[in-house]
Length: 97
Image 1 (cartoon, rainbow, N blue to C red):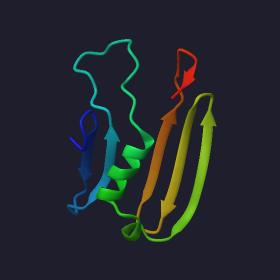
Image 2 (image 1 turned 180 degrees about the vertical axis):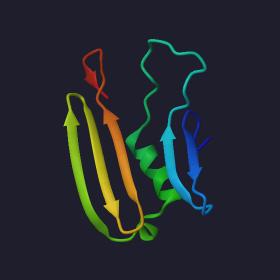
Image 3 (image 1 turned 120 degrees about the horizontal axis):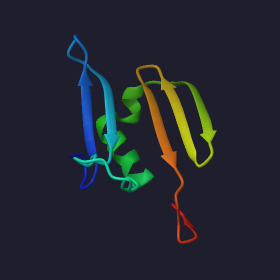
């Protein structure tokens, strides 16, 4: 667990290097219709910096943002890796999170 309520899953390639890292709230054992727990963008940034510091990523090659309603996908491609961040705005009692 990367933080309370946030898990970090690493997938390794045949060369024994990490090829995929997923930061997400832990999924329920049983599927419910409830919304998944929210994660602070700042907390995810802190975890990402701990796992893959900016200086290890290399120069930015490209970046893009794709919006789909209240969901947003940000992709930043560095020399050594690509970071995909997915986020969604939730309206709860008139507030946007």
